[in-house]
Length: 302
Figure 1 (tube, rainbow, N blue to C red):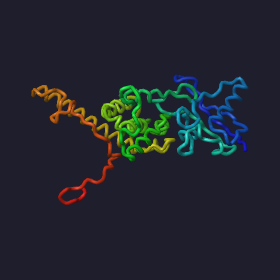
Figure 2 (spheres, rainbow, N blue to C red; figure 1 turned 135 degrees about the horizontal axis):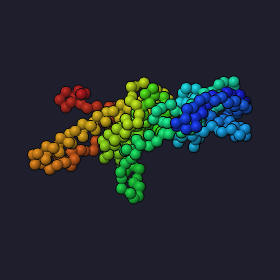
Figure 3 (cartoon, one colour; figure 1 turned 180 degrees about the horizontal axis):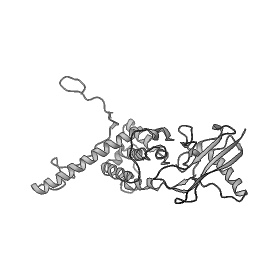
Figure 4 (tube, rainbow, N blue to C red; figure 1 turned 90 degrees about the vertical axis):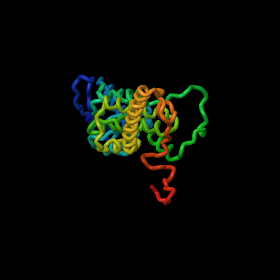
């Protein structure tokens, strides 16, 4: 079965050039085509007519690279849940339908050309702390470091983020809390990310606030995310950020006190250097995964 569609596509030659919608006819589109394949067909016909093709991002076409980012009928990635643009097939549309296609609408993502936007602000966040520092050499066995199954599941869910930017495009404030929280969680939940957990959280959140708006719990980001990442990760990020700030404050106070009182700077009263200790994240989103804590006297839960 083939479809005949009308496309209203945003055309813009550059970031400093005003843009406008242009109308194109998409004829004889196979229903098994993906949305990007449909745009390829339209572009081939435009080039045959000596017209400039529509510029858009694409790469893997398997929903894992995050390159394809466009707003389809007012919804990032289209109306189908948990689906990227490259996985959206034309059988989800009806013949004679008018489809409006726009780039991401966010001040942090300036338009480069047509449907292509500059998402380098995400790169600045990752550069601030989206990594772990580890010695090089042979890889360690996967089962050498024991991680509780619920913690591993939470980290894996966060690591599913593909960095497409749909959360920013859907948010009325242009916030990137869901992206940042996902990138923080998949490192902060695992033992390998513990040594830099607090410095990573502070650096990435501070960098995020330089480029993006603030979160006011609209939850549009969760609804638009093609990987179904939960806003619970934002709550965990905020909690870690507050704890990191308190740790920095205590560390500064400890150093000042030791310099004045003659103690060694950077050594806590318990003898640990830097006053910090490894805190395994066995508690995911506040739920103690080690079981209930009981009182030794009354055996009651506290």
